[in-house]
Amino acid sequence: MLEQVKLKGKSKLFFNWMPENKDSLLDIGCAYSFMLNLLGKKSKKQFGLDFDLEKINEAKYRFSHICYVGGSGQELPYKDNSFDIITFFEVLEHVDNEKFFLEEIYRVLKPSGIIMLSVPNKGIAEFIDIDNVVFTPILWFFKKLGLFKDINNYYLRYHRHYSLYDLKNMFKDNFRIEKVYYGGLFLNQIGFLIYKTIYVFLLLFKVSKDNKIFKKLAYLMDEITSWDFDHSFGKISDKLCIYAKKYKNENITY
Image 1: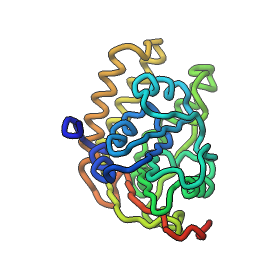
Image 2: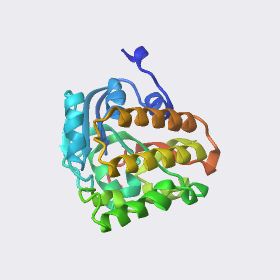
Image 3: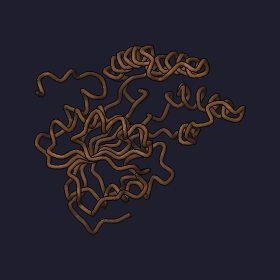
Image 4: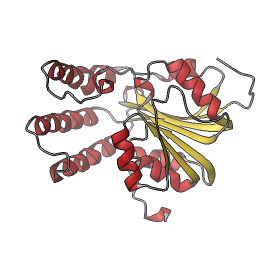
């Protein structure tokens, strides 16, 4: 039941933004699908796509009612006008070709369909981005030393930051932004610094990912980042979240 759902942080924002009783929802970069399963309570059918097959397999075990596909998101394996809502959280900054990625989303989204997304915000957040400043260089160095050989190159790339102006230019006339939220700042980055430092050390000491300490660490991190996200610091915030609609004019193209 919806009233039993515990909402906080990013899940609270997007659940409240999510329209009721939509037919189909696609989450690109769904990972373990916790957000997709939550938002799916307001849609009849749910679809998840992620390049990480290990995460998809675990998601299938947890949420067998969701239809999953493995893929990068660059070429979406769906027909034109397939979905009422498409979400992609912390995904746009990682894709190789933003223009083509958004073209594909436009293609498979129904007329007047909705997109909801979150991206790293441009500005002061760029200079305190723990992933870019600390962990991406560290993981790259460790892999060069022969450690973490199985790590995907996806996690070794620097990611981009965006302003609202950037997104408006990228959307052009294809998507109309209707809602904007800026959330979080320093506490989120400090939390990630502590979390990922402990995480890397545990992996170095061959601690199994099934160990309870990883779950407790993830829970603590979720509490910290959710509290931080619930506080907006305006345009200097860490995250930028968008709700936008596809234009009805189907002749518009990039």
